[in-house]
Amino acid sequence: MGKPRYPLLSPIYFCLITPVFYLGIWITGNSVHSALEAGYFFPPLNDDGVASSSSLVSGLWNESVMEMFHVVDFSTISWKAVWKSIPTMMALVLFSLIHVPINIPAFAVSTDADVDMNVELMAHGYSNGIVGILGGLQNYMAYTQSIIYYKSGGHGKTSSLAVA
Image: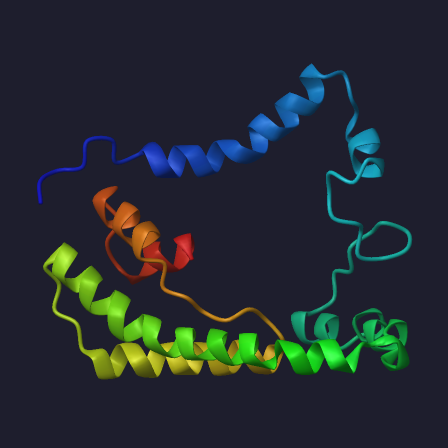
């Protein structure tokens, strides 16, 4: 494979995103407060703008999280549109099922790695199950990002979890 030409390029790029963003705000003569009002940041967690310092479990099940169910008026949902989107949802599920058996062996060939597909499929299934229960987005092995990570010198479980 050879040694990566610029092994620190990706980490430096990702570490500079936030400072460059704030530098751009400063160069344009805006304040962080005006950028917040313009919608460049996510809104604060509480009405007073202070994030709660409580535990993760109590933060997940507090009243503000459940407010989204009070905001949604199910009578305004177009159930006809939901019904029409079922084929698209099924296609996404099928695509999600076939991308692991395609991408993992391709990655293994590209990196000369030994891969146990049973372990990969089990890990993928568990991660999607847990994320689905918690209301998150599905897991997807992005082949190109994995190759970039590998060619940048990324190896090991700890660094791969940090990137994920």
